[in-house]
Each structure stands twice: as structure tokens, then as C-alpha cells.
Image (cartoon, rainbow, N blue to C red; front, side, top):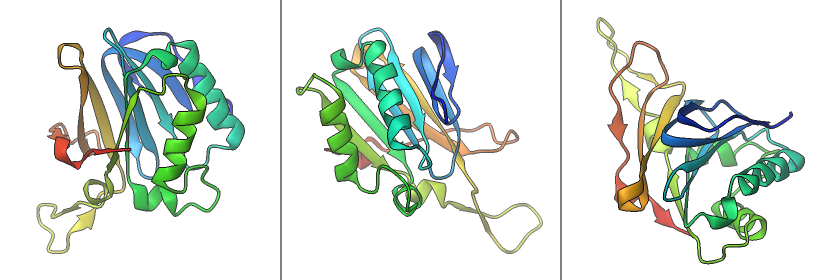
Length: 180
């Protein structure tokens, strides 16, 4: 699949196979097996929505696009998504946290960058009891939102059920992000 790079905007919404720069927020809709990737710079976030169906060429194109936006200067990278669902896909390029780490180390010059990962499997598999029902259902996907915090040298992440009727966001706990 061809990687699409979108023009920088204050607020981005990135579907699978899309790369962009966001100055305030980036929305990653419909995360079922994908990863939301965001890199912090002082003025913006470099963002992409990585599918487990991405080929080796797709990953190379994605990272080339991120480098073209200044990815070599990023000090903090974040990868959030449901590890169990992503790593279970046999053709996925990233089958482990170590695969993610290797990709970032090989694709970017800045070896001083700090990398964080967040396993959102529990959030992705949240059970909810809909009004009038007695059997809970599991989210089919979550939307992930990244918020640029330039003054804090970090990015805040939130999630919600991937449904238009759901408006309330839940913040991911910072302590759940693990340093690579």
C-alpha cells in the first residue's frame, strides 16, 4: 500500500498508512491492531498510524517520510497500541517490542532519542455493558489521541471507544509507558 504524507496541520487525523505533522493533536482512529506513533519536537509531533499489514517497503517509506519531516531531530518517540493483536499477525513487520526498537535505531541518526512503548491491549479489550443488556461487549477498536505538550517535553495520550457516539476520552497512565 502506498504511504501517504499529509501537510502539517494543528490537528491531524491519520488513518492507516498515513504520516503527518501535528502542532496540537493527532487522532489515530480505529486502532484495532495498529500502532499510533508520535515523535516529540519542541514545536510539533511527527505522527504515523502503522498497520500490522504494512510491508517492509511500507515501513521504509513511513520512516523516510518521518525523516523528511525532521525525524532525526526527535528527542522522544512513543508507540502505543494493542501489542497482543498486532504481534499476533503473522505477516506483521513488528512482531515484538525488540523489532520496534531495532527499526527506530536503524532508521534514525539520533541515537540519544528516548523511546517509549505502551501496550494498549487492556484498553482495546475493555468490556462495556450497554444500557438494556446483561452481557458486556468488548470494544472492536479504540481511537487514540496524542496531544503535544511542548512546554513539558512530552506527549499525552488518551483513548476512547472508536464510535462517533462516544465523546469522553480516558487518559493513558504515564506509568504504563515503558522505556525501550
